[in-house]
Length: 280
Figure 1 (cartoon, one colour):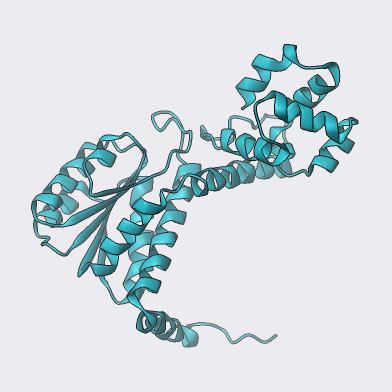
Figure 2 (cartoon, helix red, strand yellow; figure 1 turned 180 degrees about the vertical axis):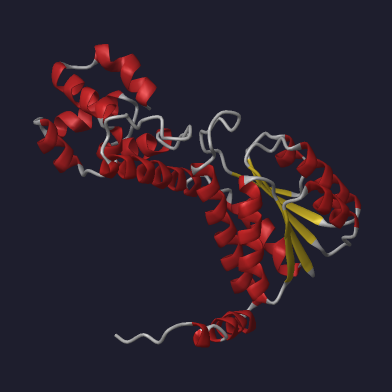
């Protein structure tokens, strides 16, 4: 979207170019503003903002903001690419949060409902679920195990390639693997997935669309946050992966029935004596 604005700026009316310049300068601010607030901030009319949106091929301001948010869901190369050395801590915080929010919105709007349904069905029937991931994805795998073991499902998370390679050979039909890889190109993950499928287990992948992992699994839940994982620290995609784990856990809990909701309540009660009583 930002590239489109730059490319079409010279074709816009003078008042519309004022809108374009503000969006290019402060895109993270724009996605938080209503059309009335944006018009007032820039000093143009609301119809001018609407014409600007239509000139970019959007159906309206809401569609424009959505596309802008999606275009902002990009990588964070150790510090966010939009962070400037003279930014205040508040500005840095706002930019990082905006990037994370945009990544989640981008992922939510591109969820393949059919694939999600198949993944929940596989995990709901599984006798055992293993989570495989390495590096940042290994942390997501651990979160998956933490979410699912409370559903009274036999679960384990592996981030060591030697260990998940051996574990994959011991699986059986009726077991499931959730393989997590932002790039979908990890040779160790691909090898373990192949071993798991050869053993008869089903594999759900949380990965990039069109990747080798997306092609070599039973169900791919594709998350395409615009990060160059060979250069950037994968912050935004990691949050999207964690959110997908939450979606799967909720879906499985509801699919397995009321007794599993009761199981969650039971595990939560076990923690009551671990906390200081609420004095409020």
